[in-house]
Amino acid sequence: MNDKNSVLIVDDERANISILKDLLKSDYTVYAACNGEDALEAAREFTPDVILLDVLMADMDGYEVIAQLQKEEATWNIPVIFVTGLDNTGEEEKGLNAGAADYIRKPFNSSIVKLRVRNQINIVNQIRTINTLSITDQLTGIRNRRGFDECLKREWGRTIREKLPISILLIDADNFKKYNDEYGHQQGDVVLQTVARVLSDSVKRTTDVAARWGGEEFAALLPNTDMAGALEVAEIIRAGIESTPILLLSGESTGITVSIGASTIMPTNETLLHDFIDKADEALYAAKSAGKNCVFPPMEDK
Image (tube, rainbow, N blue to C red; front, side, top):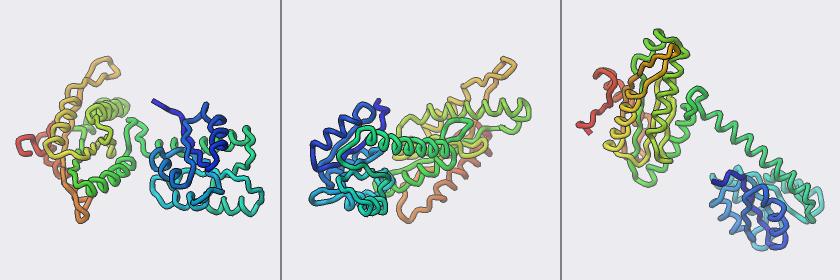
């Protein structure tokens, strides 16, 4: 797996691309494009962390390219460093007003190039870390409610466009308050971490999402999954949690069970997202009322 940050170099002179590649290739994954149209295609395909963009190019100049990048959801927030031989403050001001993050002048000074690229990469990485922390539940390490909602919105739109089913599971730790009262909050945290671990291990596809919904409730989002598939995953989760021992501070072990409510829909533009979630919540309530440690609707009713 390649963990390097990436840079896209855009210049209509191959000699300039070669110089910049040689300067950056040891630290970054480097892509290159020789004109504006190819630059836009590369930006969409690779979503680089930083773009070095020549200002003066035939057909489509740097100002046109950055304007197009800013119109598209996948590329609008990629920082652009303008690269130019123009040496006047008016052009630099124009570039910064157009949305460029920085400026590099030709002929290249290797140290300046590396520093300016590194500065933008550091900012990108810091923002990425902050964003990751903001959507991660600190106790369990899986997504929090905000992170789940972001994924749900994205997958909901994709599901409507591609006319696919989507399922959600709401999962509640049974008798959690009683468990907390008996064993203490520290031990309750171990329960939540255990449920999160089993849940994460049970939703294996890259499009599936496991999250802490809040308190002792968890959720799983299963795109392109019908009710039969959702109930199979739910039963794997329920059985996995029931069979996982939880070590007590005394050295003994105990256990926990969960109740799970499932909802599946083939949404359209007229479908309300909250109705989809409400049905899962109603199913969870039914599972609790049916005696807990079960999935609702049950497999025979799918």
